[in-house]
Amino acid sequence: MQQDKPLRIIHCFRSPVGGIFRHVRDLVIEHSKQGHQVGILCDNNTGGEYEERQIRELAPYLSLGIVRMTIQRAITPSDIGALLRSYREIKSLQPDVLHGHGAKGGAIARLIGSALRVQRYRVARLYTPHGGTLHYSRRSPVGLVALSLDRFLERLSDQLVFVCDYERRTYEEKLGIPRVPFRMVYNGISDAEFVPVPTQSDSVDFLYVGMLRDLKGPDVFIDAFAMTERALGRPLLALIAGDGPDREKYKHQIRTSGLGNRIGMLPPMPARDAFRTSNILVVPSRAEAMPYIVLEALAAGKTLIATRVGGIPEVLGQDNPALTIPGDAADLSRVMVDALTRPGWHAANMPRPDSFKARYSAATMARSIMEIYRGLTA
Picture 1 (cartoon, rainbow, N blue to C red):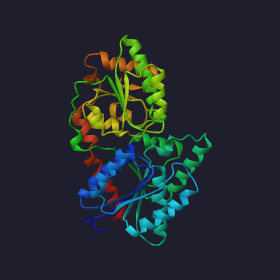
Picture 2 (cartoon, rainbow, N blue to C red):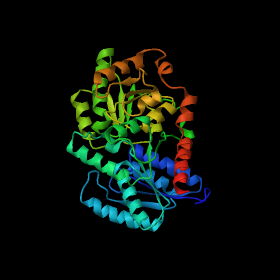
Picture 3 (cartoon, rainbow, N blue to C red):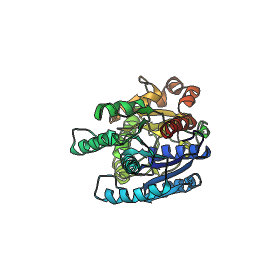
């Protein structure tokens, strides 16, 4: 294939929310601007009005369109029907590249890509885990099945792409050293996001932005907030922005902790809109790969407090005082107190803007991914 010929690229993933969708969205926009034809295949039952609005805004860049169908989170018999429909839709689009993201997206891209290859149709098959299956433990029956399936599907891959070195190390630890080519490409954000976001006059002390589920740690944030108030001996204010399966549980936790007047809950919104409400963002996750909210907050000039999970230490530095023990509300509170009270804490612990931008820009990410696509389709 000629190196200057536009490629036909389809991204397969399950849920159009969170970091996976953000990653795909940035690749779609960057590669569409370069003249490539791009489409996506994803679930039609996940997300709310905010996510639907994002998909509508992405439509002008999707010359191959968007295919939506029911794709369950767990492994179920309905996966067979989803695979058959995906095969028909993808075959009709005649892609040069199938890029699967997350466990279900990776399975769809690699199984269908391999079925097309059997018919002598040349298509590149790529897989980016984005955490996903790698969060499982081999000690659990579900985890053993999921990890074993991922290892089997590796044989149907032309390339693995990891979004951080932590993801690569975890893959090797849980599945073994990859038997196919692999490369690490950091997530990146657009140039427009490397602009400081000013904080509004009625700002709060702390902010959480993200999915409302235990894996992301909002419950730890609420407990740590209460501890921080007690440590400082005065009331504070915080906001939680997002949606998810555990939203009602966190509302109950806030209410029963007597924090109903001091922790507010907002619906999902663009991160930069949420950043206007506070100078300090807290990312209390129990597990991550390379969360976009970390990159977005640092690019916006915010003070970041985060747990020592996934690729976050690769961004902040392994020994950064802003890193806390996952699941430990007391340790999180300790750092929240320091960030709020110690003069110069932000300047001492946040990365330099110039070096940060050079490493984590969407243009750099898209260029590296396109090099992989070109190498596989040459």
